[in-house]
Length: 449
Ligand SMILES: *Cc1c(COP(=O)(O)O)cnc(C)c1O
Image (cartoon, rainbow, N blue to C red; front, side, top):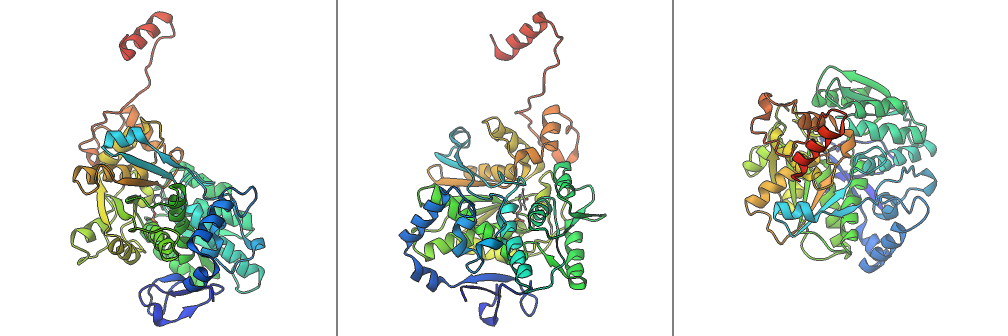
């Protein structure tokens, strides 16, 4: 077996084929995809893998050109190329952002643009793997699967809907009514998914979808499903690859359901294990919205007291999760990397977004949470000025314009949850009479000339 499911907490409990429909280990624990590392080490040296991955990253055709499938031996080693469904995920920019770095007091700051993908969030990296594996099982007659379903704060459903449409497999998405952006809602609608808008929050949708997949032959696509993490893992590999096969000192990532932070850890650990990189693993910093901060609270207690919270409304709607499925996975990743958790208030995340946008970026609120947390970690001396830092940007800013529009228009003043909003980067449009004189006056005032 090149790769198989194992219990996350107790790997010796047994192994299950990736060609079966299974979401939990006996006893209810989470699963992990375990790779045959000895076979991978036998197949190529670290330098050999680097050379293969570099060659594929520059390839002209798919699936090699996909950042995920260019690393397919580490992702789904048994899949046939004909079953792979790709929308060109991965191979995204790792941008140096020197101006923002200087403002934050960092000599080497990078943004990994994980949301510059087909559906505008990092969810594509994992969904391509899950839907391709379901496609394989259906095509080979290995499992009876009528549809693929997920609960979502918006981005997972968009990714599922796109890949399922590509695969000609029905998609069913469970969304919390009125809690996602219009751009997120229209994506599954446009891609032909069955959209169920439920009068509850994400955690409520998640509970229902888990019951539905017991009652109907619908395959569960939430990140409890470890297949998605295998694709997301390649973000870590790509970061190292883009740094010339070196590791950064820190990776800062916004966390909600907490699958992504574990996936990053897994990618870094696997590279080191197989001799593709060496040196210490990057320290991971998870950033949470203060209004949905169960991991932050757990971290404060040294992971002694781990409890769900009732998530409050936040502009970082994709991480408005009080009871994260991958809490245990995240804690293990943080322990293994001497990781930390920081939080950001609504005011802090909006100001952080606006500040980054002033340097030419166009950040989503979740990336704002990460940047606000980074600022605090630098301020506290946890992250040092000379350390190399990568911030994982999880979605395209164009998917989340509501909060930016409100910020710049000044529509947010007076909202209690925005206490402390400095709004010093506010830039409202100037209403000027359509005549030369007033226009010149306005420009003189603004430019100071
Ligand atoms: C899903 C999502 C997250 C959170 O990722 P987790 O793996 O659930 O922690 C963060 N930002 C955006 C934009 C997302 O869509």
